[in-house]
Length: 355
Image 1 (tube, rainbow, N blue to C red):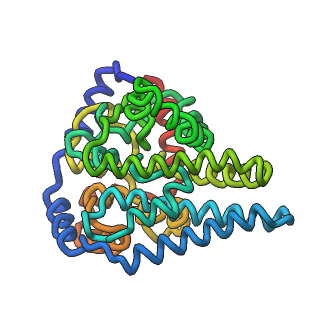
Image 2: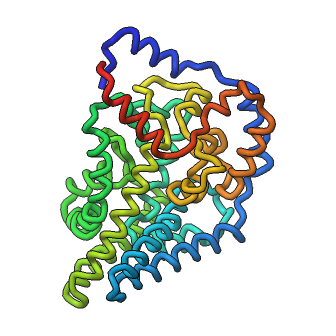
Image 3: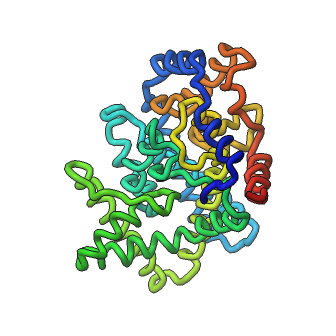
């Protein structure tokens, strides 16, 4: 949408051009040097335990006859697999060679069975962090949601609820068809190969090593999607419906988290780093629920935009350091919020404001 009111347009430009706070950026740069090493003794056990608990609980939800126990297993499976899936975000920032085998292991255990192989995010998410792309039409992960119509928010969540169906169609049907129909392949690569929220985003064809990685990941997800549909004939509807229900709930939680990861108030202007930080959200302790709906460091999303190379396990310490170091007037303190509901309410009220 376009802001036609000149006063609102001027306010938008002023927000985007907020001067960078040198003290905050300097303190963040120092922390990057101190906390930039990913610890494999944290990454591997966390990811493997989350995946094992998630798949085990899903199996319980399928085989247990007691409805209450099955639902409890489903909730545990959803939260555990959501945590395991959230490591896809870390994969986009891990330095080459820092965690040997982790990308392959994650894709084999989590990415392919959930039909979200890492090629869907790698090479896409880093564009969201590009200094001159954030919040613009070229940002694959940004829409001015707070400035859109009220119906846009329910639609945003509904799309996530249908994700398992879309992924089965993407990998189980369109992947094999696109190999036979070159024009369809070009469309699938450009428009259906990115975990993005910007419908105008178009992806370039992969090249070199990344193209080879893309190929085996897509082949794996395609085979899994077809096996998932084929499971109907071997095991009936229940396993597929349980899988899709858990997957859908997990994706909705992630979409709600995405909804409050930013304030979504920018409308295409290039933003200063400080403005990008203030348009992003931390939900730090003492709140405990964000550890469930924003796992693997995602509760420090605003801080992550200052420190994109810092691994998730160091963000809590980095946040505490910045809170103690920077005075109360620092913009850093303005990026911290209490929880999800106030932020959803803020965005919802913004969409209802006449423009």
